[in-house]
Length: 388
Picture 1 (tube, rainbow, N blue to C red):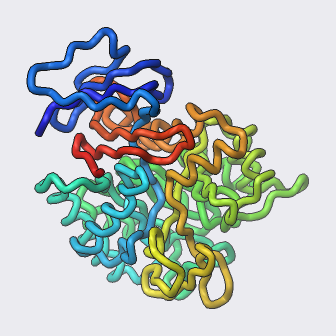
Picture 2 (picture 1 turned 90 degrees about the vertical axis):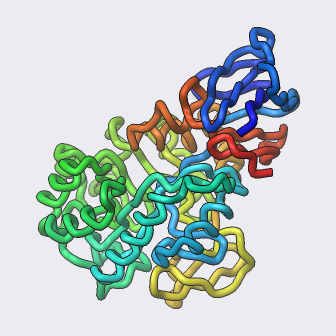
């Protein structure tokens, strides 16, 4: 693989801004980063001049169900390659493949397929996003706040069933979304934490007190905040109130302008600060595709005007891409470094991989994006391999 030196107008690491930056990439790793004036081009290396562009880390999507006409529940190599290729076109260089509530056997089949793909995904140099692991969204959720998850497959939380999922995942499980108020949630949260998973409260009717109890057991995240949650009120703040007032808890946000209104997004950012919000897509198979009918797990959704709904008219994920989420949150008033952080360092830190992903730093994977002045993607590198 060719050694390259990217000469950018500036780089957002994202915690530091480097003007007139140089980023030296050897193989799939960042070998050096700093002012270009302090670097020497190695013999045989290629310099890429992008002095009118901004370099940032590749986006990390913690919550995505599909893209490019395919769903992660398919669990096949061709489907997962299509998904990872499509999202990389929009700057996502790493993702956590997210399941949807289904039968235990169907979920196990999908987990085994995703796990098999993860084990061989680096055998080629084809540029596409890396699957970092699996996010279990369901089946341990609230029937009252299920959204579009099929009610017939929702289960009471079970450490034994979770154990079957973990065994099938063979060390690749990363996140568990759970409704903490449901009977059996406490021992399931304990089992998930013992296995090293991030526990995320979601699809939940939890009260403030129930959410705080889950946090005390180790819940560190909240799945697509506001959506599929007990509503907030001044006498019943519920899980949303608990998340807004807990600085240690990460908040997922779908910043597509459809799932959450502008005022509510601003409130979340003001309450949590940029260090504790992670932008996610919750993208479906329809991401990057024209309007039409698509699948989420085993059921059909209709996409019209880029908005996904099931047959009952309920929002069913999104077609949001993370490059658009970046522009949307900046348009809302966030600074570019803060917006970048919410798409890179924050998700990496939640997973405990911030030294390898989500940062422009020596030793990190060479997942690098170049943005033009309008914050549109100009170039993408995934583990040092150029997409375009």
